[in-house]
Length: 92
Image (cartoon, rainbow, N blue to C red; front, side, top):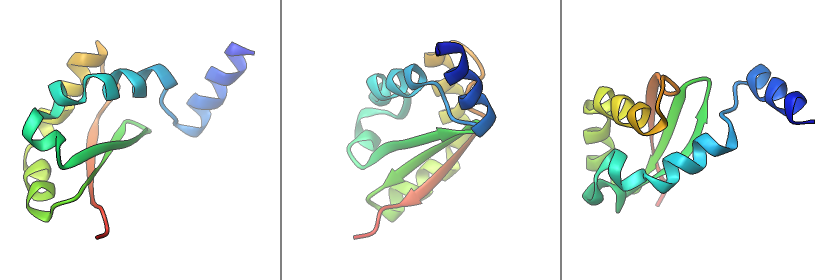
């Protein structure tokens, strides 16, 4: 059953559950304490890390530092799991 689930996850482009939990557990390390207060990890799909922010200025800052976020996330994950970052603004 585990092999079937892994094949299905690869087919639909979903990250392994342990990948998301690892990123969530290390979120402040990846994004920094100040930014983590305004942003949350939403998903990881086909290598795209989706981050939702509560503040437009913070969202813009994350877009500018997306290459650093990719590197930090991959360092925590121990391999090239993240290739891009998509930043979304949380509706108020």
